[in-house]
Length: 49
Image (cartoon, rainbow, N blue to C red; front, side, top):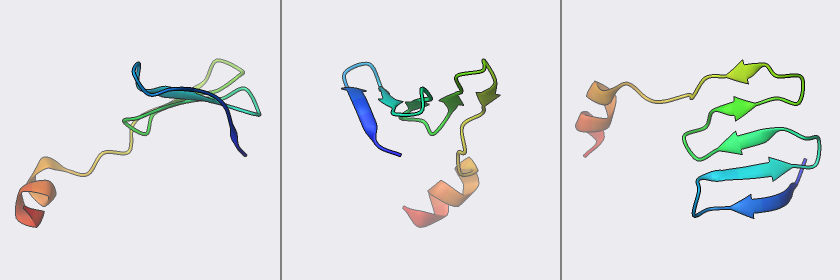
């Protein structure tokens, strides 16, 4: 898949299959389904810093 429209100022990209991918790793699929963000737990981020 590749990006057909990029909107970094708004935090999202449109992919060639119609999916919208957000900077927080969430997705809105063409059929209306939502894929929640895949965020690392805050405790893990604190240990990495």
